[in-house]
Length: 348
Ligand SMILES: C[S@@+](CC[C@H](N)C(=O)[O-])C[C@H]1O[C@@H](n2cnc3c(N)ncnc32)[C@H](O)[C@@H]1O
Image (cartoon, rainbow, N blue to C red; front, side):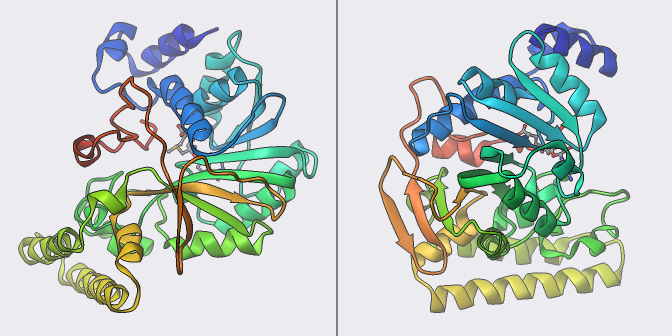
């Protein structure tokens, strides 16, 4: 099988023609899996010195397999894992005859992964748009610690729970206020399970460092220091208050929860403005996603572009210039594209 067979399989599942899937713009999340995978591998090699040739790589939450395939085509020996049996079948179909990768159905936060792989067997573990879907992140990162070798590193990307834009419209469900509420409150606004857990940046810093990955390098993929002003962020917070005023709440209880969430968010924003520098605030609130690397003390995480150090956050590298070919909207090339980018972080 190949990508074409993967598309046929997907079309049959959706009861549409493959042409309809090929012609849709933007391409759906499954359809763009290979292209996104290639772009991510290109992005990694633009951020840090990286040689994938012969490296053992684990793709956690691999979904349709595009990233695993791209990593394999760059010379890595790849294993992809996903909790969904359906996605693993897709990934296998997608990779067959086009990449050497093995795929496994397993919950990455369970001890099941330790039965599949040898301790310390991976040089690189990628976890792209997955951390926010996992409740037990501590067990997940404990497993990563178990699987990573002594010089290994992790690449991650996770949406920012402190983005006022996502408070105005949560990325997956497009609902106002969700990111300001605890997940158990989501049931008031969403009829079914969402499996999305927003956490502050400090949560990820704390667990990686606790589980023997003390090195952290973020990449300012979205150019927040250039794009954002405190005035713009303040206006977005005002917009949250305006929207809350006119919102059609299902009941008074939800209104109360959301009011508390908004006030807490506003107070933290102004506390940060008063107590941390402007750069801290721009990064913490302006980023839509946090993208970066965590690594062992001995890992060689060598950024290829200038790095700034911000108290309370750590090292943040500039992103390199994207290739001439448009660096697709969902990863953002121009400010306008970033502003207008459709969220594309959810398998359909
Ligand atoms: C938003 S998708 C990201 C897919 C892929 N990494 C990419 O960038 O295209 C999240 C993936 O994480 C998987 N996932 C969620 N919880 C998981 C868990 N506990 N263990 C393994 N995979 C999980 C989902 O099934 C889904 O395929």
